Amino acid sequence: MKQAKFLGGNTIEIVDGPIPVPASGEVLVEVERCALCGSDFKVYKSGWPRTPGHEVVGHVRCPGHTLDGRRVALYIPAWCGCCEQCRRGNTQCCEMKPPNLGWGTPGGYAEWLVAPTQCLLPVADDVPSKLAPLLLDVIGTTGHGIRLARRVTGIGNCLVIGAGPIGIGAVLMLQVLGADRIQCAELKPYRLQKAMEFGATQYDASRSHRFELVIEASGSRLGRQQALEATLPGGACVFLGESTDNWDIEENREVKLKDFFLIRSFYFPIGEFVENERLLVANKEAFGRMVDDEAPLEELPGLFAAFYRGEKVKPMMTIRR
Image 1: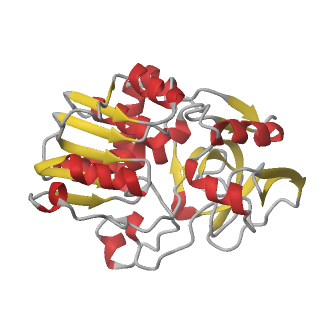
Image 2: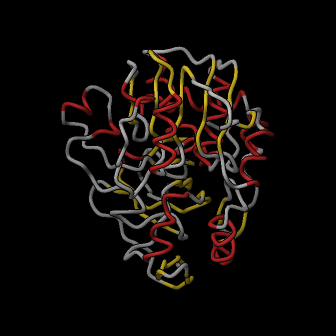
């Protein structure tokens, strides 16, 4: 099979390798699409020993399995189902700290992969394959963070920091879940323009604004500092963006002289998947505009380079059959 090797130094090579063999409790999945994700930038720069790619939709190829032939999305953490968090439904917080697809195990920038059976999420027939990978990071992660925030604050007046895939996904999910006004802070012109096309207005840093809900989706230290300072007393600040930076927050007057809720959200519980499917189907046109390019696996190096430069919002790798 063909698969991508991330060699470091912003270099991707497409190589041949054997089709993987499932172990006990695993199935073989024929990849159909894998969405590109900004969290892969670090392996793009530094290299990785396994094929990455974690926003995967494909078809189960396991004769005799109940899902054989079915189209599935692949849940990233191989949750155990036995620990206290899994029993509570918090599968994204499995206490066994299982390997994550595309990180601890080979991922979806390939024609085939193996996946644990508990990570197979059957995709409804009315979800287009082009949009199905959005159910994972873009809709799943952002939707869960917003739902956590709604437990403690309103979502009338919101700020999203960072207009990458997670940030623009947050703009869309805020609209779907009932936000009144959404501003967006983003340094890259193409991404800021995209956020505005999706209904956000540009954040004006020269004015003093504070918000009921702030979604920090850049993962940068400065973005996190800005998010904390921009949260209203009694409001909620949600950190979604992944980062290799230390938190290194300055507890200045804008941060310490107020009560507020700080929420760190990682991924989403499996129990939210069906509701997220419903939201995607009801808003296909809006979410569909996020997917701004597609290319086959053979052209992944060029597609990923454009994504890394900030010229694409949510491109998809596809497999030619």
